[in-house]
Image 1: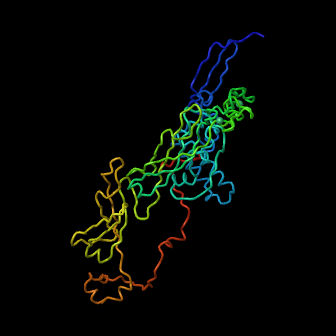
Image 2: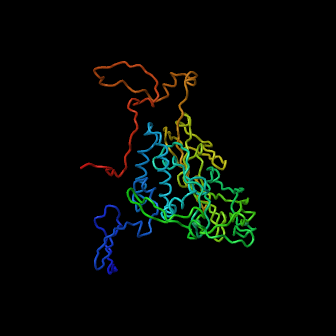
Image 3: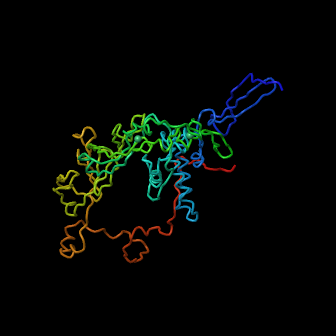
Length: 458
Ligand SMILES: [Zn+2]
Ligand SMILES: [Zn+2]
């Protein structure tokens, strides 16, 4: 058999490809053969080693953020347990999709997933210390409204090597008062620190780890992965035996203190400053205060502020909104009183202009009584006040001279002129407005603003 040498390789863009924009055709030609091979992005661009999450949402691994969001909205709506009461697996599917979306919607976790597959993002979402988001929260963020589910994704697993320790992201509930007045918070936390007995080697004395037998020291093994339905690819997966390290300590060689884990838990005391005017979801970063790992700088501890709803104030940027109830007498004759008790306990006194009648729902603005401006707290937003007029009750009516009142008030509506030809007498009955249109109540499917046809038959 004579040898055949490839003497030309031509790369072509596959114009007709429906699979992938970045799909390429390589033509290897030798004296006797021309071999055409089609490669898709996962092979040649080092794209995802695992596309299960993309498949779940029905998007290509190259989909844009917007495409992923759209696809999730559509899928989540289809698989929402409320819409599939007869499908016992609906809740599970819905959660899987939420988990996939959680990973793919963030640039950082998506990149980890693309590079390392599910292993790279395990521990995210399910008690791994990373940021977690409930699928119900995701859903309400996308659609509004609320519901609740348990959520568990991933699990313990080894993580790929990093240049820096993992950040600990901790949601922190704050009140509007705390954001208005500022506050310092001390808290006890537990973090991983490099074991001082073995100095982070995990080994007893001078014991050295042995090469991992499973991966022969590579840290990865070749596995078959489904790239997309019908496309099987061979790809690298982190070695589960040694956690991608390529080497392993024998049981008896492990450090007594950290049991070979290289780090131990340590209690620390952290202090964070909630500054005046900080925003909801603002991050307070304690640089380098996160878990330590041998050989890499520690990650950060990141507190993400979450504002608790307030009983009387609503915030938008630096402005505040509140509703104040005034009496009918105040509406007609004016007021001069403490209208609002502010977030710092101050009374805010307001005098209405003489001769001004306030209608129910009228609003006023109290300049510079809003939230302090972050980093410039002497400057403030505005406080908007909606004035609701409380009508007096029937008990009051019994105590007054109704004839005298009628004479004082503007006159009643005159009889219609000309009168309609037919007049029916209908009884006066009090109602609850929620009963209005009750028979028609049904789940309305609000569709995508952009209205892309999903599946059109031609
Ligand atoms: Zn140790
Ligand atoms: Zn191994």
